[in-house]
Length: 211
Image (cartoon, rainbow, N blue to C red; front, side, top):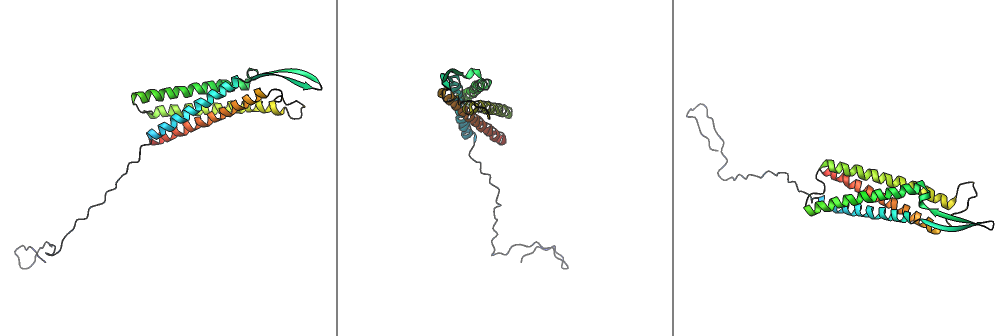
């Protein structure tokens, strides 16, 4: 073991040196490596476009089917023929569904046009948190409104099929099948539009979490 003395015999201050035959190996310190995940922006943007396009198609179908729900028929009771005429405009619930379907279609179309315009300009679909919050609020409002309108119209449609409990009302859908079937299809499309708008709201939440 080598040492370096201070020239005095009594005491020595030494610096220990490694043995001549030994080799000192400096082990590298493992630094934490952060692996960046694949950006979810483009994928979420594509899912958002599909969800909004589906909501637009379902809302347009709901509106067009409801507007087409009109028919004339004849109801026979005890041999007496009673002329019937059914029209969606006779019910406030069906009017509400048609109006909300038109508003939801306009909202979805506006959002798709905004996305298309940003894609043409090669700008991010979601530029800020404020924009995402506005999208989330709009998706929530129209999703709940479509659910409310569909539920109200479903109650009227069910009443036409079954009548009022404990009241001997006939089944009006037998002489008016076209009206009842188109109304039921319109209500189903309204609920599907509500589901797709809710999916858009979920995507908004994911975007908010990633910003």
